[in-house]
Amino acid sequence: MQLFNFGSINWDHCYQLTHFVRPGETISSDTYQKLLGGKGANQSAAAARAGAKVFHVGAVGGDESQAQSLLKELGVDVSGTVALVGAETGHAIIQINQDGENAIVLFAGANHGLTESQINEQLDKAAQGDWVLLQNETNLIEFVVEQAKSRGLNVAFNPAPMDKDLTLKVLPHLDLLIVNEIELQDLTATEDKAKAEAMAMEWSSNLEMLVTQGSAGVNYYHKGEKQFCSAFKVDAVDTTAAGDTFIGYFMASKLAGASVEISLKTACAASAISVTRAGAIPSIPAHTEVEQFIQKQEK
Image (cartoon, rainbow, N blue to C red; front, top):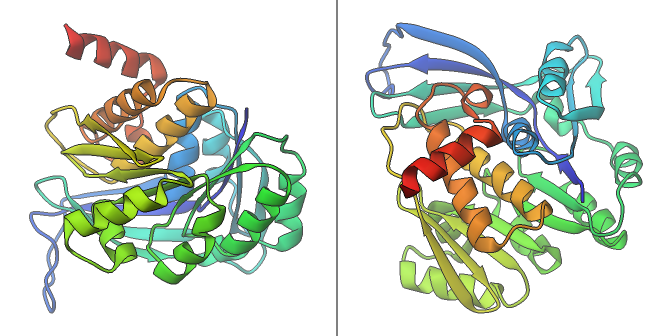
């Protein structure tokens, strides 16, 4: 099976700070990096590093070439990525505090320039049973879901940033929904964890669902049953790509036919390794490193 990721491509402008900037405050950063990122690119890179065949479908600015080259070097097929004349490549301003937590300001740019013809052209390359992966940093989400399902493809959606109305609208057509705890609360309109989980259980009768819980781990729901995988304990440096690394690795394991238990453990291990390093894509480990990490943890 193959993975077709309709996702964002950004340049991440990363600033290491003692604390997040407060309203009206100006502070200096001792460390700055410009790195390739975006939830879409991060997840494509992670899935490719995990061994999956990944087609990234997206858009960049008209004078951009470095971003595609970097993804290609990681093993991602970027033939479905277009350069839009007059548009700017998407970017993010990322503050990283001393605890490794982040605060992000996002500019979509060319990521909102996908066209229906581009989408159909790429989906025509897929075979029945292949997977389509989406985040909420690009446009035409509903159209992609509709066209993917009409071709007999499986659809996974990570609705970040959260758009409740859009997510509920496409929910009946999804095969896998991936959210974090806060996004689940937004989606269910409740901060009551028990009520939110009850809704997740109900939805899982028709699809698989992952709810990530940061350093605690992840819950998997399917057909009214719940499976929990605890996170590996590490010293976090930068959590920017933790969720994206988890998703990419989980999808790759799923495509390879691994069990849910193995897929969760592998994805949690990859995510744990990623937070011990700075940056988004540069922090994503190779599959061999993940295997060695798991073996070491199990000794």
